[in-house]
Image (cartoon, rainbow, N blue to C red; front, side, top):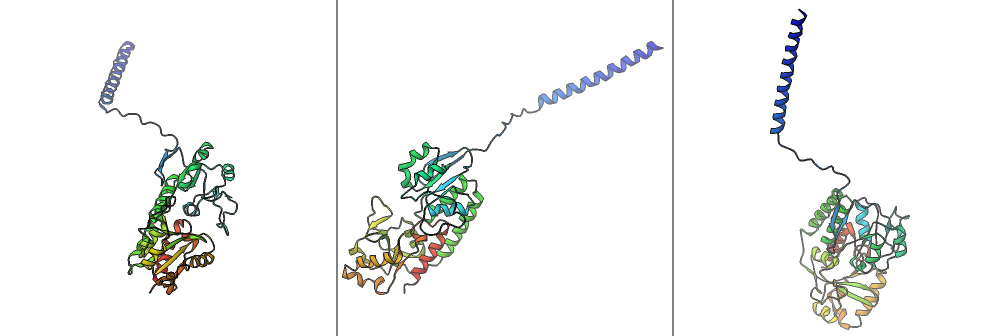
Length: 324
């Protein structure tokens, strides 16, 4: 009897093993028929950031820079608008931007304070193209130079986009760009008859005419003005400006003269008018006879206004509107 049970148990075991073997064979067949997936590489760290600045220079960052300094008030304005902390700010006359009193001053585009820049040693320094002569020294200490420009509204828009990409603030940058574009469109939808205008940039003793390829020239065009110096030959060192030609100015008889300066507005205006009055014909210009000689706000026109470029356009448009 025991032998019969053993034989029956053996037969049952063989049946189970056979079934398992069949299932394993079927599973193996299915596995062989299934497409082979390539192993996906494990992603580690952040992807590198590659940008092209406003001089056409390409820069690559392994990660979002942790510190930045700037020599320009306009670029500082853009950085702050994007919510980016700064390690160094430009040295300016008058009160500093609220909340930045403790941030190191590092000079301006014309007089950089290299000692202070080396002291804070930022990963990124925002500068104008004129700073290129110092580029090698900065890069030697590990600082990358990002160059910006502000010769048009488009330049400022491109700078906002550039900073947004470098500092991982793309969404914030797009919001600011859209707002500026909307305000510019609103301010340029209706244009009156062009007002013949002379834009003068200078300080006592030195005066230049701003050309259409300057920011003030671009704003004048957007505001509906006619730049009487548009065909003046540009200065080699300052391609956005031209030497004043009193003969041509008198010939073209501007209805409006706008002065742009870094210095004391009234002192510049008085000195400029005194210089021009050496030529008696100056008194006969329409702009002089009607009192349409104005000094534009230095924080909007004497330097890069950054995100306040719309405010600059509004001031320009309002000034042109005073001409009857």
